[in-house]
Length: 310
Image 1: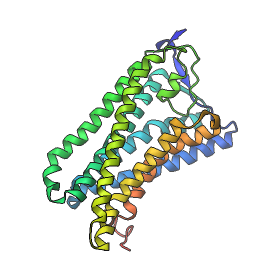
Image 2: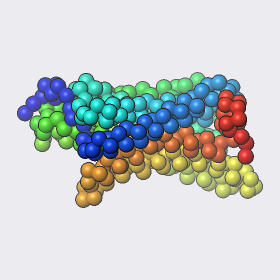
Image 3: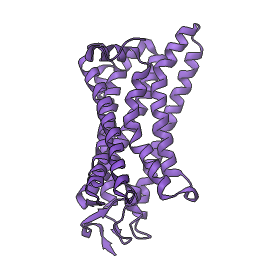
Image 4: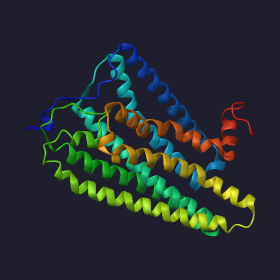
């Protein structure tokens, strides 16, 4: 039995054996990372610079873009660096930092998506009270609560995970360090110390999921009562980007963590981990800007000639 602190480094999931495939992996991840940097950077710059977008919906979208940038920057650069240097190593401190930061950004993003569903509920179901219920101070407090809750959740899990004795080696079956993979290295019974935190987290996440579902049930009821087809279309249009981002976040995460072990394989696990950890941060800006005319108009001012109204 070895204490986790006695392990000087961890070994990440080995990438394809040939040098050509490793360089292909580097180029693919670089393209996705640059797309995420560009898309989320444009979202942040546009919302920050255009006073017409200083509304609760876009304030939360700005926070979402920052969290997406943080999440993808936690995992992808180290993987690209390992591909270039043809190594699997990550230091103990680097692994702990990845575990904390990734858990922090993903947890805070889920809490923020929950808050964004409340924003859509108030906007559609209680529009006359929108400015009262979601004033600037309230929005700041809600966003701060999402960030603080994510940090606390990540801190508790990281501290508890890295206090476990590891007796299954130091090879992490993933291209970045995350809590389930570290728990696989712990002794057969020691992981039970983490179980109570997992149960509490599952209850919290399920409570957020129920809140989101109830919010959208109320939203759909309100939208269907709108007499004009144009009004219904406009109301649905404000919800669809959030629903698409939320669906991508939940479906990839659920499949990654809850898929049956019978269909698990190294290649499938790698594809799934890329889908839930790398793709959403790069795709979310596209989802939000594709049909959003306000955002397109603001982007056209920021980058003249690049975005034209259709």
